[in-house]
Length: 151
Length: 474
Image (cartoon, rainbow over all chains, first blue to last red):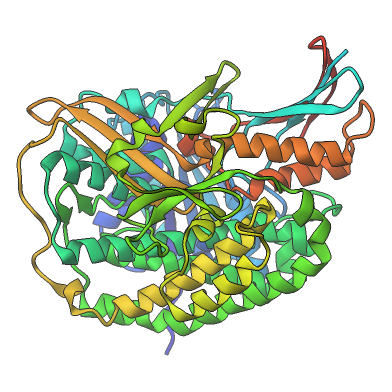
């Protein structure tokens, strides 16, 4: 019998540029919870080989920092595959990875983007107070989403 | 009046930059310059940190080649401790570097460069990318992703994680290979060999229809530099430096990387954060040298493993002494992947990799140390100066992309001379200039320590500095 498809959490960013690493911090915290059916990946940046684990997931959430000025709180938004986006530079697009998963590995999971508003990309490995608050909220959000999708 | 052409951005390189093409009074291309316009200042950031932290910090320079920084950093630490690391640690570091070469070259070949020469130079950028490749050659695109996974798996098995494993340390490494890890790596080998063979055959077949590009994509005399073993074989970690010229003549050999500052100088340009190293005894322009796969294959007499040695023999037939076309970086890259897979296979039979003697302990015995290692893109130097407590006082990083900077400028100029006939930037030239740069697989995050995307444009500049045309691609 094949293994059930996991709920995949992908946290990415540079942990030495303070809040840029918030996605990684969230993913690491989720991993520490050992939630059944949840698989966690952390990356400095999104890379094409993520298409394969994505294709094996039931659902996926991409966790990253955002400096979008209009965003005051955590934003969870469902995203769909889109071909032709930026996939191979340092800011690969989750939508493009989803498209690649579907195109090459014949399964594109339902996916969300979890954007955490942050403010400080200076050198250092400590999160700002704002980003710290986002970590707590993000973990709560991911737990809720995972339990819905794995039910 | 001289003129200048500007291209923005060159896509599918790691980071982004800007290109200026200068025209002379006769309306001909006189020069070109690849600028890097962002700055991260990692060298400054490292000052004040303890030596032991450096292998944990410097891999954060880049998400594509963190292992290269990790290993060069650990070697600089070895030099400051003044230790010979245990043989097992040296072999384990080498194994990880081979994984790094495979994963980085796979990304460069299959996903950054193959869309150009497999889908056609003049295919619209919207199709000339990995999705276009996946549509036209799904098996190849899938195999490329899997080959990269193989390299990443080696790194993860040894370092405990794929990205930024702080596993190599001054004096050695933290952990050995496990039986389980060996079995996992071994299971990948047949597929890794098959994919590499597939890519090699495909490239050699494709090369016949790209003879024109091979002649003008960075085809010029230069020096070549890289590490070699004592008998002049291919080397990727440890070893000594060799310079050869385009006739294949060795002009300097078995140079100690610790003394790099005695024979490598760095010139800088106000318009770019990318420094331009050159071979100091010959000055400029004669001291321009290339590093990376093409250089490594040019300077070595053998790869040291049978399949790659056969390929090296064929490869060398493309030159007279040295292979001078930068288009053949792709070919060299694939031969290095093949060699890496062969070396990985051999290492898995070595019981030293399971040794418990992995680290030499020592205090600060030298106040300066240089670590050199072959990154996928070329020779990487980490030069650290510390105080008696091992706190970093000064850091200098010489990055492969910087060392290829002068050659990239020459490549852009050569392509522009061929395709530019007038004051407007033709689409055909734009595509080919982008690929000319991609031959070197530049990593701008490393070379400038820039973060994020770096938009690049091409500008055509007249003799008086007036901009005649600009192209920006987003």
